[in-house]
Every structure is written in structure tokens, then in C-alpha cells.
Length: 353
Image (cartoon, rainbow, N blue to C red; front, side, top):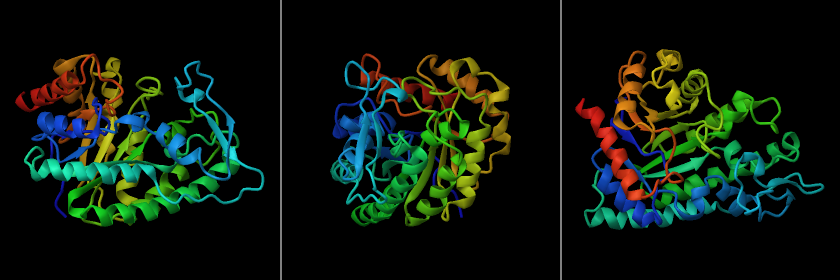
């Protein structure tokens, strides 16, 4: 099978815009010739990423109890250990969610996408990109008794995902859709740096890979965003190298039960920009027909820094696109539009060099 993604840039998901329409219009203008798909920017409540699932999906659920609220004086968590803590109520052995608010938002944004594509604002060849958190990321609030509560919540969540993937792909033509799995808490879990998770981290990642991705119709493009997170800052944990992300990517390609069309591997902090040891595990990457995007565009050193990282990574991987290390909706700078303009300029500098 020939690769279905060949673009130079991946937009990871969140964008510095106020509304989905603003994000789609801006992204089309700045990046329309560089990407294969456009996300809606994850604006509004979704700017908190899985904070959206904590508040809109988990908290209102019958059978879920709030064990501890955030200790932040503003009421908004400042880091992962200030997020609300949830548990299951006494005697609760099953949960159920009727629908996923994130999918409702995606369907509303697709209507905007379709209208903007029809009037020529969005290039006709671009797909609509929907980014969905993997289970352990979406359910990270179950910290009170993770070993007992998480398996119950995960079963319910996977049941929800199966039903909502069907709803999503029936409402959006599969040939117009690209779905990205956002995998961040799973990475932290595998690194052993989450205080509330017991053994079993690999299965919490690998199980959903084998069970969920195969449910997506083959006409839909599918990718994995493997990330070290940005809460409260990039990265939540600084890896020594890309070995873990390469291992996860290889497993996803081999075990998803359908083609994987792209892989995004979050890059290093700027101090590792020229560190060959950080990039050396890329020599073991087996992407198959998946387009690899390295998250090596950092907002701190512009085109020169990207060129250094690109040159170092190229020692170990012959062909790849680039991206931000994560979505940048929460890092808009003083002017979100200018941030996007600069992102496009920096990426184009690699094409021209």
C-alpha cells in the first residue's frame, strides 16, 4: 500500500484562536499548502485538553464521586497534581456514558469545515482532523484508587469510543476524515513518573491500540501523537532520548489492525537540539507506510533551531515531516495569528534550505 500522507507539516491539534471558525480560517490561510488535514483548533473548554473530559464527561457521571477538588487558589489546576481527584462510589462496578461531548463538538466543527471548503477558504483536498485522547489520558482523574477504579472506567470508555467512532464516521464521509489518537498520560505512565498508577502501564497503552484503532474504517486516515505533555510546561517529564516513543510507535504500526498513516513523536527541549543520543533511537523506527512527523519546531529558537534539530535527526531517519512538539493553543504568545504566521515561516525555511 502506498503512503497516503506525504505533507511537510502536521498540525498537532490545538491552535491559538478564539473559536473553531477562527482556527479553521487561520490554519487554512497559513498552512493550507503544507498539511494534509486541518483540526478545528480545540478552542474554548477543549483548550484544557483532557480537563474537558474531567469536567464534561467524568464529573457528571452517576456512580462517580469527587474525592478532592483542585487546591489551586483560582480553581484552575496549575499542574497535574492539582487536578480534581475522582473515584467510584460505594458498590459501583459499572459505568456508562451515552455520548462523548468531544464528538458533538467535532460534528459541529465539521459543518464549519464543509462550509469553508465549499466557499474556497479551505483547499478542497484537505481532510478534517479530529483528535481524540487515548483512555488513560481521558480518565486521568481516577487517582483515588486507580488500581480498582480505572479498569471499570476504561471498560466504559472503550464502549463509548466504539459507539462514538461509529457515529463520527457515519456523519463525516470517511474519505474526508483524519483521526489522531492523542497519547500523553500513557507516555508518562510508561516512564514511571505518575505517582497514582500501579504496574500494567504497557497494557494500558497496548490494549487500546489493538482494540480501538481497528474500529476505524480503512478510508479514514489514522495517526498517533506520542507526547510528553505540556502541563504545566513542556515537557511534563524530560526524556533522555526517543527510545520509548519509538517502541510505542513500532507497536502501534504493527498492532493497530489497520493502516497507520502518520506518527508524531514529540521532540526534545532546546538544550538537546544537537544531542545525537536523543535522536539515535530513530534508527530503530519501523514506520511502514506511515508518515513520520518529528515534533522539533520549538517557539524559542526559530528557523535556526529547527535546522539544527532537523540535521541531527536526519542522521538516523532519512525522510520525515515536522510539527510543533505539541499543540500550541495554550502557548499563543502575545498574538495568536502572529504565532501561527511564524510557525509557517519556520517550517517553510526547512523546505527552502
